[in-house]
Amino acid sequence: MKPLAIELFAGLHGWGEGFITEGYRVIGFDIVDMCAALGRRRPAGIELVIQDVLTLHGSQFRDAAVIVASPPCQAYSYMAMPWKRSKALADALRSHPSGLDMLNTLFDTCFRIQREASEAAGHHVPLIVENVKGAQPWVGRAKWHFGSYYLWGDVPALMPPTVRAQKFNPDGTTHPPGSWFAIADSNNRGSRATKNNGGSRFAVAHNTESGHEQNPVTGEDGLKNARKAASAQIAKIPFGLAQWIERCYAPSPHETPFRCSMEHVNTLIWKEVVADKELPEPRWAARHLLG
Image 1: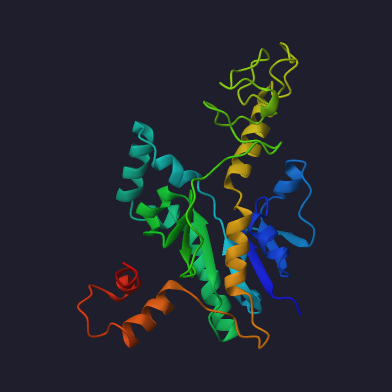
Image 2: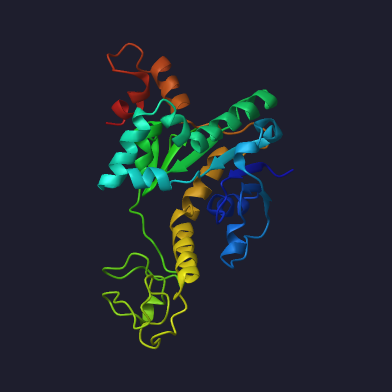
């Protein structure tokens, strides 16, 4: 029987792709089929349920081997910007009695679902939550980050080396200098990512051939779709990260999940190795031992 992975806020199924290749059964939840909305094929083997994550009860995931989640990050990212409006919004949320609760509703829901799943299962069901660096002032310090992907929850103690986040074009090429949302075929574009004659905001058309009124991104709907596609692609979990997490929580042949959370490892180190040393707190034990 395949182990079950639950993917909350599934998006383009970045988590699911890594899990499915390692033999998991993956069920994703989101309020929209992002793959269908962007004209992409959903990775084979992944099931998607269109349902608001806020309405889920964790008891239905009692059989899950692991839960992964990537709640929306727009608010956190916006308030991390050095703009007057973003700072004013942050101040307003801090001063409002329910400000933090409103802001962190989706983030906190992930842990509520985990708690309910664990209670129903009779054992701890691991959870990994991914978000942006800007979430840290609001939800607490992340336990690890993989490039721009920051992780909370049951993060494995042994993680792959951190990397600098690299955005890619749909054609698989990397962005040239000066390009941010360069979605065009960058093999045929100038090295400075100049805007094409069609007036494209996201440079989606072929820069050397498209003329005025021939750009596929002209019009309000085109711009919205281009922004949506770019945002979804940037937010997609890297395959290597998803696969690493999967391997850490893959059930053994004896149906006992391999637990390697940072808290568990540090607790063991503290109790068995360095209990008599003057270290500040148990959670720092591993760092002191490893120098």
